[in-house]
Image 1: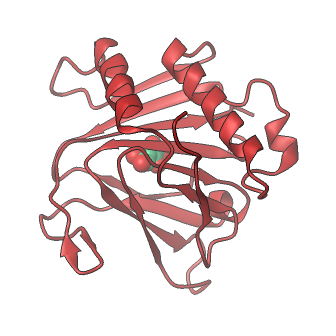
Image 2: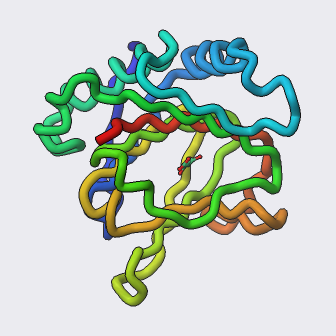
Length: 193
Ligand code: AKG
């Protein structure tokens, strides 16, 4: 790695961590071509791929990089008991979003353990976090730029929903500026219970 990953705690959401510079531009290009080379998205109607158990080598490498990065910082980015599990992740989802496509507000299924990682590629987007129970706090927006990584654990994973609303052009605004929607690809890594 050329640069040291910088981790930020997302204020107001316990257990939500963001690393904006997780992957270099070079690594993003590399990862994107590995994903597209899988041939999962040759048909336009297919926009999601899921894998369980043995993950493709690029995903295993990504998991190792996540572990390395988390271990190198002196912050509780993931609770220690999550870090010792083996493997760290055994389930993968790759989502491909065309402009106008996003994902509805949800809490990830309970059949997945605590400690979920999402890596973003291509178009930046705003991910909105909202309390799973109404009235437990205000919504929080997080910018997921290409090459960034978010980690959700504890409250962030169980007590907050996350969503990406790209339905209408003009809906995604960050710091007063509209995001120019392009294709976005995300990699979600989880561990089955
Ligand atoms: C999911 O697949 O459950 C997600 O939340 C994906 C989020 C993303 O695309 O960043």
